[in-house]
Length: 110
Length: 115
Image: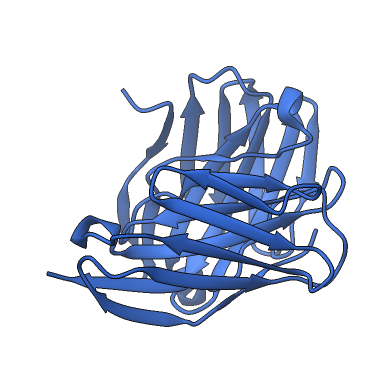
């Protein structure tokens, strides 16, 4: 299994602004997933993008994947205070288990 | 009711005590996992089980043991707790039919403090 590395470690924005966070990984993948964790709670799956996809949307979420650069980005548009959470990426190779990096801590202020 | 239930949610214990954290799920998933989360270190995999007869060590299994009592139950034990095992512990499940995606479903966590 491999661990993704999220960047930035922390991000602070105002409500209504867009939030972009990035994920880098080291080896080829089958897919990459993004999870959200509200403070002290369990992680919740947000979106999955497969290695043959370049972009995927789900509501206010937009995920891109660049396999040549081994990187992904998660864009949250029109952020809300309720989006305040930590966000983790999880790259998956083969049938490996998921591992998680330190995440990006997003703070959305009213 | 939650699909993945962890008990206890919070526990304070003393060094040297035996502690068991329990996880039960109603999702019908064969695969179950235990992770620990420490501030600033992300989540690290302790043990995982792909079915009742299968137990595998993760990256930080030392000091821990597990028991898969049934498809729905996966327990994590600390035989002799030590302070650096103070952490937030998560149980998770996944469906092998989604092996190509590996999506995890997490419990709400068990916060363990070892004094």
